[in-house]
Image (spheres, rainbow, N blue to C red):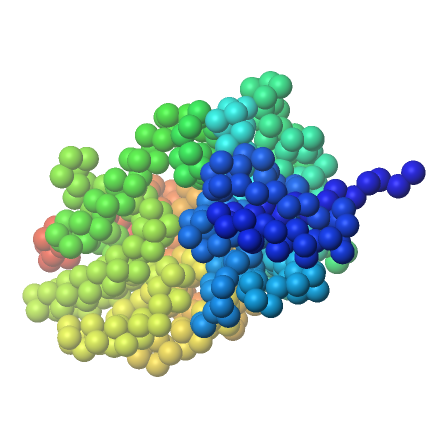
Length: 557
């Protein structure tokens, strides 16, 4: 037996009886497929017209509901043809030309327009690759879920894939899409009735978790999800491990969407500080930490304006003749309450916030100024090494700004050295090489910092204009106890020399380490055995009167 078709309900808002009589006459040929319902106002009957029922509003202009008050498709009832056409309505009918055919065409147009709008709405809220909700669709889902039971019994998960962009760049975007589809498949396999999934960005997802049955269910789900995502992925015949960071926040009654999304986000950021597939549940301690970081970012912005930063310089010793041949510029922040902060306390924050670009230019400018000051005191020229972040490589003003700063300080560019990390070199190597070549034409030279801790792509050592390799202190520090470290350091030095690169060993703290490095043929050393990082005034005194590098050299004979 066929299911009866629900008639189209036509809600009429018109005080004149003539409109009702005319419309009923036009509806006679349509039989039972439509029914006319009269009402004095929209507010008096709005509760009867919920979503999911087929209905159209027919109204004269004075009774038309205000924008946003009525979700029904609206047809205006007019005495004359409008000029210009009315906006915010699906169609209109003019009394003098209204008949059964005109009404039928109008209702068909309204229905087709409604189907089209629904399709466009669905496409606008759907991720084209995965078919799940996109960011806009997620906002709709979240608003609806929070409206249920005042948001109780709901948890929000914010998931971010670690290093997905690196995999995407390395494998290609099509392979990256296949990886995302595998991630979504694993996420869907963990969802149950009442849970929903959305894709917020290329490597970000949101999960709405139903916790009405058990408040602890969000934590159970987080454990299952991170475990599922920790398994290797197979893409184009290659096995990949992709870390993930998941933040979970429980909705609070009537708190709204924005606080919930923010809490899930900062919980995700907390999880991101741990390697692998991890999750964190939002709590007030995390919230206080996030606020503290936000406050610190604001203070760092002010510190740049108020000149609260300073540079300390760590000397580099040449092992051939025992002379100081270079300096590394290390930024410090003289915080009003927390004292002198090392770069580890604020540089990562600067990287995240984008402040690393103005901070980097401040360091370069101050280092060039101090180079000039050393020369004016009659001290010999020394190479000045400054760390350069990948974000600065992306800055279109890098070349022009550096050219201007060098010209203003009157320092020869050949004495300026930029230190790059292996990770920065590996990211967008084409852009890195292009920028390095342009800076190299100014006379600047480059060193590779923390060698051995990143990807160690020897291809880049050959293809990029690098003149000096810095071995990370983590390898140098274990040489006395571990033969493996000694072999690694020796091999790195030989590799660099075979590629015609100079070598600096970082973190040298004992005469035994110095003796081993000299035996391996290392060119230069840097570390507390030579000198701690010094402010400019102490550096001048060290270079002029207090140099103990020859005494250090005497230790190794």
